Every structure is written in C-alpha cells, then in structure tokens.
Image (cartoon, rainbow, N blue to C red; front, side, top):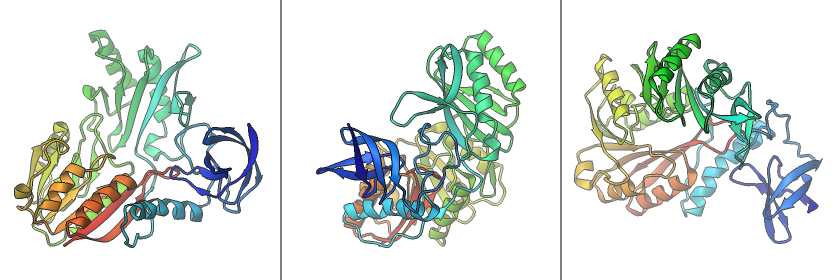
Length: 407
C-alpha cells in the first residue's frame, strides 16, 4: 500500500516515526517534520520520495548509503544528529525512572574506526565482500567505506583477495584491524584448514603484506607484531580480540575512567578485555583485571611486564556472568570499573550493590542495559553523579556511555 505520511519523531535506530491511524510506522532515512511517500509493510515502510524535506536534511557522503546496512543517519545534519544521539541516553534513563543530567555528546570518531568485519559471499559465481543491507541477508559489495580509519583503506581489497583465495564455500566473516604493524586479519567461517590451505594462506599473507593472519582466533602467521598503544603501554591483542572501535574513543574513555579513579589505591577492572583501562589505571594504582577470555589477559600481562613504571596488575580468568565477584571479594577494593558486553552486567551489579564499595565507574555500549544496571545501584544507595555519552560509531545508534557513581 502506498500512502503519504508526516514524520513525527526519530526512533532509537534513527528511523523516522509517523502515525498511520494509531499505528506507529518506522520509515528509514527520514526526519521529523518531513512529508514522505512510502510503501507500507505493517509497522515499517519503504521510503519512496521525500515530498517536503526538513531543513536538517543533508546530502550523504557515501554512495552506498541507504543500500549498505552500516550507517543509518548520514542524511542528518550535525546538530540534529548530536541531539538525537544524546537523547537516546536521556530517554533510556527516564524510562528507568532515573533523573540525572546527561552531559553533551563527545565526538570520538577521530580518524575513523580502526576495526571492521566484512562478510564474504558467493554472488553470481564470484567471491564478493561487503556489508549486509539493513535487516537483510543480502550482501552489498563495497570497495570503500568513509567511516574507516586510513589504516583500513585497503580493507575491502584485502578481504576480497582472501575471499577469492579460500573460495567462500560457505558464509565467511573477515575481521580486519588497523595496528602499528599493519593489518591484523581474522577469518571466521572456513572450518579447520588443511596443511595445503595453511601454506597458501601464509603465502597470501606475505603477498598482501599483513601483520598477522588468523583463522577463528588460531594463528596462521605473524609477520610483524600487530601492536596497539594503550596509555604508555604497547600491547599485541589476541587474534580476533576485542578493541574499542576508534583510537580516540579508547583514549577518551581511558582518560575519563582514570580521572574518576584518581586517588584510589586498589581498583578492580571487570570485563577487562586486554586492558584499555587496566593499563592506564596501573600508572597510579594497583589493579586486579578480571576477564573470561584468557588470551586477552595473557596479552595484558605481557604488556604490563614490558612497560616500565606501572604499578602491579594481577589477572583472573573468570566468567562474570556466571561467577560475579562477591561482596567479600569486592570489599578489598577502593573502586570498581566494569565494561560489559551489550547485555550489561546485571549479576555483577547486584553483587556490587550488596558490597561496601563506595566508588563505581560503569562503561556501557547499550543505553537500555546501562539504565537497568544503574537502577540497581541507585536502589542500593549509590548516586549517579555523571553520565557521559561518547560517540565512536558515527552515523549509527551505537555509542559508549560512562556513569560515575558514589555513595
């Protein structure tokens, strides 16, 4: 069904939202106040034409925009974008019944994203790489991406060469990270390689001048250390390991967390990863880093040992979803930092709430689970003194949030 709608507001994913009768309808790539013609499909609609454009509409910078599912908001001007993104945090907290000031959005895009996962598929008999269209399994082949850091400029070409070499017998994911040593690449979806395939991949890594090539996190070849600077330390993350999306984002988050922990002698860093916070906190405090992925903690330990001037950092491999630190363990620390995956840290937060801790710094990549976890701590007597949204995922609804709490 084709109809005309007037867009009322922006949704959580950047879609415009209009009313059709009493039904909210989500229309991608539209802005509040616009009149648009759409093809209705339940509570979603396909944009056909913009009949009356918003003054906040701008030309997108990428030719793949509206086709590739990576960016949702390139059509918004900067002022509207920043307001909408900050409001995602404001509305999530309000929904949870939390009244507090949310600071201005920090732009942490910097040079762009330093890691990306592209998908390899067989399209018309040829290996193609790219991103999936929004809410679809359709591959949109790309040869460039404007939100990537310069170190990833050749990522599509490298990914294409790898996909062609392995044949894309089944869906392939290719994670590429820009490091000081060059591109670090992890392939997923191939299954266990035979010796002949290992030799071919090793030769291809040399031809493509990769720093490191791994398969499902298992090393194929390391030609140069794929190192990343964290604070004053130089660390080589494990193959396929997690990193913050941008170098500027990690640095800004690290500075905010370090400032909030100033004067605390013993700090627990939970969901520590390979140490973006622990390595900075150890410049002034002793740190206990807890993480379920053992290779990440091994990388952290090596970085600590090779960096002069750091305070002691101990590590513990532990699944904090199943075995959160208990109050007696938490009470040994002067402050706790936690940075969980998108699902949040509900089990660990309940133990923090029952402890004697007075200083907590929460880092989150999801506004809803952040608000939920903050509600638990506030109910236990904590005050949420600062909420800082940080944007290292330009043109998307994703962001980082720091909450600083005390009691």
